[in-house]
Length: 185
Image (tube, rainbow, N blue to C red):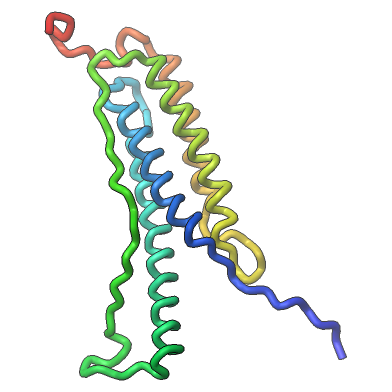
């Protein structure tokens, strides 16, 4: 007979995935708020923010589906085969509670220095790298490969670094919007 191959299974770390959702949203809001009022051609800060929110939504959907599957399996173990309803079991809905904190953000004051904004963008880039590493290990398939496309997060970090370099190349006096009479308030 052939040699026995090890049995592998998909692996999910629900706590790490749930933490990743919050961390992605914090990073998204950090990028968004640092980018408010910046004037420099070809920046992608708001597209990066959008992609981070979309990625967090995909992770949240995965977590909710995993939790719904766990709830369904627990019901099967407890009560045996599920009872069919008038609509049929394929139409049954499961409420999946997920405790996620509300992510607050702020708007930078007009004239918030470019150096401070660049520092926030560097912080966000570091956060995204860390998130990609933790999410890459939080959901793996039967082959041990990450189920989430964390390479997309790496691409966003590269885009973020490109935007930071572009900001440094722009005229510092023109990059940060200065509303009229701000200094007279």
